[in-house]
Image (cartoon, rainbow, N blue to C red; front, side, top):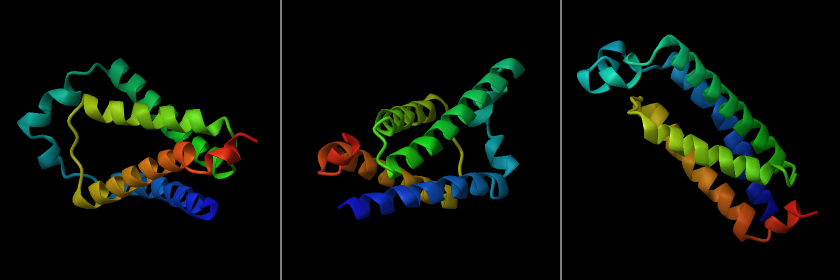
Length: 133
């Protein structure tokens, strides 16, 4: 079971940079993201608010990546960090409408499923005993 847990976390560690690359190089076309439905989501934000939200997103992404490494090595501090970064990522995605390509959505869904599996492993299986050492 420990081996499966480590493989799931390792796949997540690999998928995070893949998601970033997909978002940069396979971005949503401008004509879709400029539709009236998405007009007010980011357009009404001031430059300062946009910069602050980008900094918060970057800090959250780095914290999540670090927590993946911590739970891979069964460090007890990694469990709450991982759980809270997942909660904050889900909350942040619920705040604004999002436009994404099908490929990005597929990889993001796979990452979300693996995050759920990781939480289940960390708190409800014998793997939880590894964190309490």
